[in-house]
Structure formats: C-alpha cells, structure tokens
Length: 309
Figure 1 (spheres, helix red, strand yellow):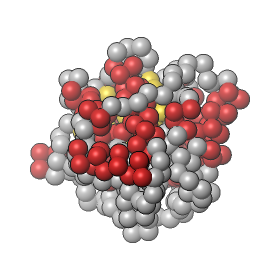
Figure 2 (spheres, helix red, strand yellow):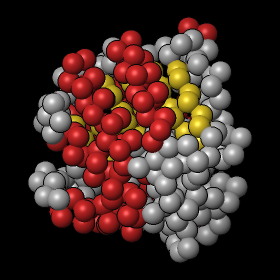
Figure 3 (cartoon, one colour):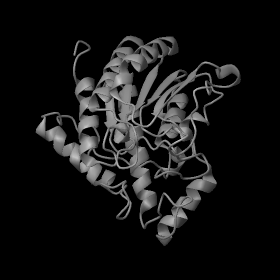
C-alpha cells in the first residue's frame, strides 16, 4: 500500500474533482478498519521510466507546462499547475514501486490509490491523466521478461489510453467494464472491439447503459473468470475506479462496492493460481471521496484476505 505526501501532490486546483481528498478519505478508512499495516512511501519515476511508454516530446511538454503553471495539458480537462510534472512522477513511480516489490517477492499484492491513469496516450495527456502509469508498468514488466499481462478495468470510463496502444498486442489481455461511450467520455470501448490481427480475442469490452449496476455482476463475473483463465497471466493489474459506484458526480452507473469486492476476489484467486499472487491494484477515477473509500477498501480487504473469503 502506498501512502504519503508525495501522492497528495497529484491534485488539481479547485473546483477540479480529481483532488487529494480522495486518497486522504481512503487512508482514513483503512485505519478505521485496521487495514493499514504495511505502507510504503511514494516514489518518483525518472524520465527514463516515463519514456518506456511515452514519447520524449510529451514528457518534455509536461515538464515545460509544469514550470509555467498555467493552461491545460489537453483540450480542457487536465490543468497544468506548478509542480504537475513532479506530481505525475510520484503517481507513476508509486505504481512502478508496487510492481517491482511484487515481482521481487517482497509482497504478493500492491495498491496505489493515485494510480490507474488510463486515459493518457503515448504522446498526450487526457482526461485528468498526465502520464499513463499502467502503460509504463506494462512496458516495465516486458523489460523484466513478463510476456502475458492481464489488465482489468472497472472504472466508469473506458480505458482508451491502455486499450488502443495494446489493441494488436497478443500478450496484453484486457477486460474493460465501463459506461457506454455513447453516453460518456471518451466515447470508445464498443463490444465489437476484441483486439486486432494476432490479438483477436485477447480484449473484452463490456459497455453498460446508464443506471446499470449490481444486477449485472452475475453476468460479468463468469465472463471475467473464463477470460482470465484463458489469459494464463504472469501478472495481473486491476484498475478499480470508484466512479462506477452510484452517486458519483460524473459517472452514470449504479454499482455498490460489492462489484469491486467481487472482481478483486476473482482476480485474487486467478493471481494465486496463475502467477504466484502477483497482482497490483490501482485506484483510478472516483469523484466522491466516500465512494473511493468504500470501493478501494473493499478491494484491499479481498487482497489481504484468503482465497476463501
């Protein structure tokens, strides 16, 4: 579990909904439920790590915008502020720390509440996401000899910044549940997109209609379990965005934290059977701090518990 002031730097100026209150409320809930025993400090990613996934031109442009501290890093969702470069380095570096510690056997699982920045593209920021820690993590795993990665995304938004860079990659298995792009940013992730070329069948998109929620779990979980078994992953990454919960001010889905708990339990079992428990979870979106606390704590409880929970 990553906890520390470094992660709080990734917080856009008011009234932006992506702010440090989300992580603070989550950490408070962990303490309340006595789940905060193993904590590690945030770490900075260096530019060499960022460039595993991102183009150097993008890294340079964020650094420049960070020094100026004004304007936007995209079309208007992701503001630049002084220090945004360092803040984004902490978000990415903390995910990489979780990956490295899991790969090295120091821990079975890791959780970075400010990770899961799944909209950033190789050459641009997008949708509150300055850099894409997931893409960087996948490239790091590749450099460590990992050939099969299972990425599961239950954020209300489609993880376009991960899906399309790996759409034709047969070693990255993606299972993405989200509100339909007909109704919500980024407008992508149709059911017919299942991977291209040699990667056909290695991707699953499950777009849901606004208002859908827990009643779909009994249909989603068997599909996830079958897909994960077929993937035979060497490493599992879960982006568990809390904006798919009812009451989120941006999303339109109506899940409870039961969804996050169920998915985490299923992936915990998959990781234990397929890859020595190697699983890293990332907070992703979620713009009600109380929802973030409920959803993410439910994931942590499944990861620290036994397979029989």
